[in-house]
Image (cartoon, rainbow, N blue to C red):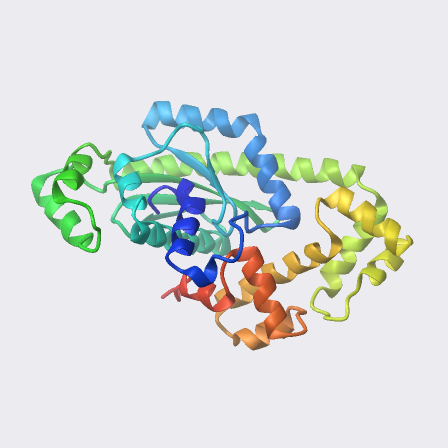
Length: 326
C-alpha cells in the first residue's frame, strides 16, 4: 500500500507520466449514495478520535478511503505516515505502484467482505478493513505500512534488492529504513481485529444516518431511486420515466432530485451503471463490450467516456490496475 493517503497524489503523478489520461480532473471516483456515506463517515468525530488513539497507542496511521481508492483522508490531517513509505511514493513509479496496490487490495477486501492483512508491493505489512452498509461497500479503513521484521543489515539488503527499480540513493534509503517502524504479524492481527470492531461501529452509524435521511427525503426520490435500481441496465431509461414514477413534472423532478441527492439524475444513473460495470469487470467473465451493454450504456464510446470521468481511467486501464486474483 505505502499509505493510502497518496491516492490523489498518485493519480496526479500517473497522469503526468501518461498524457492521454490527463484530460480528466482528479476527483473522487465514487458518486451517488456511496459517495455521501464516505463524506458522512469522514466527518464523524469518532473517526478522528479513534485515529488519534490508534496513533498514540500503536504508532500506526489510519486512513479512510473510498471503495475504489481514488480518494483518501488520513484520520489525523497532519499525519504523513511512515517516512520510508513517503519517500517511495514521492517517486512517479512508486506512486503508480502504490495506487495499483491500494486499488487491488481494497477492492478484494470489499468483495470478500472481510479485513485483509497483506504484504504491499514494497514489502510492508498493510491492512484493509472494508466498511459495509447492508452489503454495500461504502469505504475502506487502511493502516499498517510497517516492516515485517526488525531493521538489520541483512534485512536491508533484501529490502534494497526488492526495490531495485526505485531511483533513490542507497544512503538515503538506508537512513529512512533504519528509522522505519516494524511490527510482528501476530500483533498486527490483533490491531486489525480492533479496527474490524471499529469498522462495525462505523457501519452501524452509517446505517443510522441512511435511515434518518431516508425518513426526511421526499417519497418521490424514493420512487425514483427504486426505479433506477430496477432499470439502470435499460439503456432506454429516461429522466421522464423517473419523473412519471414520482408523479412530478420533468422540470420539478429534476430540481428536487438534484437538491436531495447532490447530483443530477443522469449522473446518478451513470454512477450506478459504472459501479455495476466495475463489479462485472472484477469477475472477468465477460468482455468489456458485453459489460458495456449489460450495464445500460448504448455505445462503447459513451461507456468509455463515462467510466473515465468517474474512475480517471478507461475500463481496460482499470483492469490492468486490478490483476486477476489467483
